[in-house]
Image 1 (cartoon, rainbow, N blue to C red):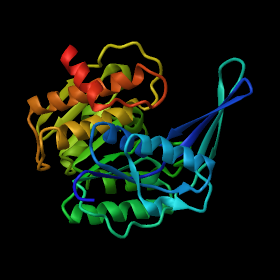
Image 2 (cartoon, rainbow, N blue to C red):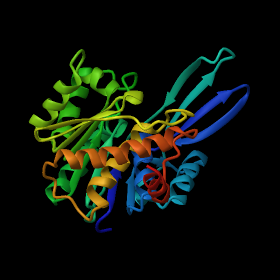
Image 3 (cartoon, rainbow, N blue to C red):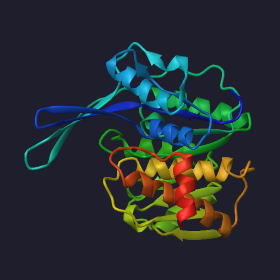
Image 4 (tube, rainbow, N blue to C red):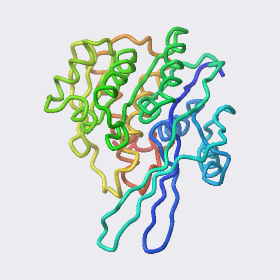
Length: 304
């Protein structure tokens, strides 16, 4: 496939056990970004590792309904990864993980306009080598690279190694977006501006840090701005950062017909950041990682 987006990373099942009931939802940050891009009318492929089982079928159906194309090589004989949350009577939850990231390498990348990577797909061995190789080959062929570490500290325990993996991908990316939790894990006690400066000085063209209810900060070249949050009634925050990432990519790379990967102006930062914040607000207004469609974004923009 030429043009569009190639997303590399995990797709998994979030299983919630509460009052004897079991609910299953499709999760995984890269899978959510792929979903968000496809719903914004970006032709999107996902390269992952998904089992040939009931959970894998749930993932394939959910993503396929929104137009995401899962690469044939994503099918694996291993069980589909799962995160199980058991909710107690007092509302507290305990978690168990059955995760693996061992995808086959993707021989033919096509000619995607962007390649997006992140989360466990970037940090968890042995598949992190596959992720890095796809990013390296795609970047050499001219694709724009975007990266969202979405670090899971409980699953990526070697902070020194994870920091090296982060730098390898972050500094080779045109867009790198972190959450404030990511920034604190990777750069303890450092300010938002310190992290943004570090990313920009390291070669990132557009850097961002999302801060939940406090909005987001974006940087490009010498420009630094704060994006205020969009007021909304919050159902939950699942998928908010992924929605911000997908809409940021869409607004910068696809909405206006192209971006050459060079630094952008403060006005452009405000424009793309505002659209990303709007998309995140739509997502948090409803349960689960239910990312907005292009029609919903257009409707919301018309109402502003």
